[in-house]
Image 1 (tube, rainbow, N blue to C red):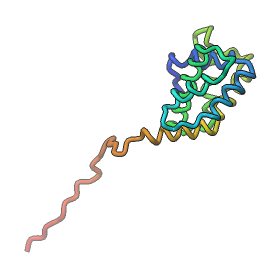
Image 2 (cartoon, rainbow, N blue to C red):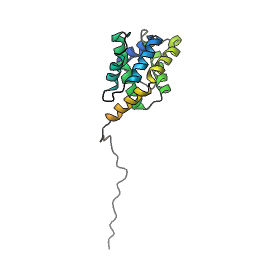
Image 3 (cartoon, helix red, strand yellow):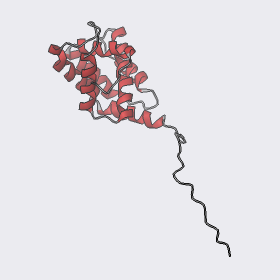
Image 4 (spheres, rainbow, N blue to C red):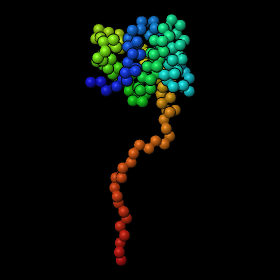
Length: 157
């Protein structure tokens, strides 16, 4: 059973990646490689980057960009190696109930290669990591425990 939980709102974007041709996948990767603005959230930066792809279906690529940017953030947050991350996505997308979104076993290898290409952008990975660090709070208090209740012993004379 997959450990990664992909929200339903991002599953269509992943399914659209599966349907891309090789040229579109390469163009998407190139756009992500050229994205460098660390002041933007990864999903906003990805949307900005893919808008430069001239032959792209604007609506589909906007959805893909939103998904890619958010999934990069998830990967950075969980510190997952690329191969494990892509494997988890493939498992989730292969086990969906929806026939429209499910990745058939016959297309799984191709889908995996497309995901490796798209999520393999070191430049965009750096941008996502920078955003993760930028939005990390300085003083987050998560909890505390009292380990012992030792008090000094006072000797009576």
